[in-house]
Figure 1: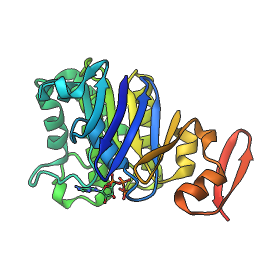
Figure 2: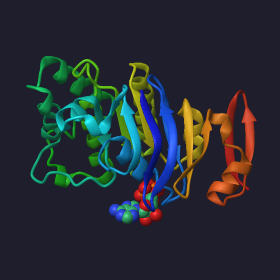
Figure 3: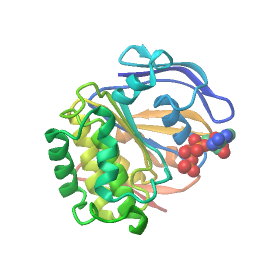
Figure 4: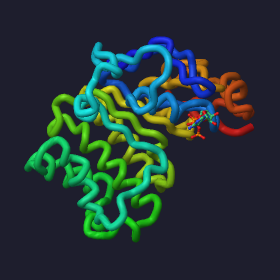
Amino acid sequence: MLSLEAVQLAGRVGPISAELAAGRLTLLLGPNGSGKSSLLAAAAGLLDGQGEIRLAGRPLRAMALSELARRRAMLVQHAPLPAGLRGYELLALAVAPLGEVSEAACLAMAELGEYLGLASLYPRLLADLSGGEQQRLQIAATLLQVSPRINPEARLLLLDEPLAGLDWQHQLATLRLLRHYAGLGLAVVASIHDINLACQYADEIWCLHKGRLVAQGGPGLLTPALVAEVFGVRVRLLEQDGARLLLPD
Ligand SMILES: Nc1ncnc2c1ncn2[C@@H]1O[C@H](COP(=O)(O)OP(=O)(O)OP(=O)(O)O)[C@@H](O)[C@H]1O
C-alpha cells in the first residue's frame, strides 16, 4: 500500500526502503531521536527529502493536497488545538473537508465517542480538558478522516505516539481501534514506546535506531539482544501461553 524507496531526510532518517501493507498494523519502536516522527511525517507527505514514497502506486509528490487529504490522515505529536472550540466541533472540523457532516459521519462520531469515552467531552471547551482527554479527541478526529464508511478513498492511517498521555484503559482501547481500522483494509502505522504493548498488538514491528530501520518483522523480532542493542537496556524474555513479556533485568 505504501512503499518507501531509499527515503532519506538529511540528518534525521534513512536511507530506508520498505513497504507498509494494507490490512496490517505496523508499530514503530525506537529510542528518542531515532527518526520515528520524521519517518511518519515523510510517509504522510508532510516532509520531503530524497527517495520516493508511493501510496497505492502513486508518488506522494504527484498528489495534490486535496488528494493527499482524502487518502491519508495523520495524528501529529503535540499538535496545537484550535482555541475556543468544543470537543464535538473538533470532530466536525475533521470531517468537514470530506463534505457536510453526513449521517454516516454522525454515526461514526457516536461509535468512536462510545469507544474512547468522549460523550462527556463533546460539549466542553478543548482548553478546559486534561492532556489525555485532548489526546482522545485528537485520535478520534484523525480516525474519522479515514473511516471507510465516510471516506472510501482512504488508504493510510499514521499516528505519532497516539498513546502519549493516555491511561491504561484508553491505551488498550486505542490499540484495539487501530487493529480494527487495519481490519477494515487500511495500512495503519503508529509510533509507540511500550515494547510489550507492541509485542501484543502489532502485526509488524519496525525498529528504528539512529535514523536506520535496523529490524522489521513480527512481534517475535523483539529479543533481549535487539532491545539491548537498540535501547541500551538489559531485559529478559518471559513466554507463557504464546504471550511474550520483556522485563527489565
Ligand atoms: N525540524 C528538525 N530539524 C532538524 N532536525 C530535526 C528536526 N526535528 C527532529 N530533528 C532531528 O531528527 C532526528 C529524529 O527526530 P524524530 O523526532 O524523528 O525522532 P523520534 O524517534 O520521533 O523521537 P521521540 O521518540 O523523541 O519523539 C533527531 O536527531 C532530531 O533531533
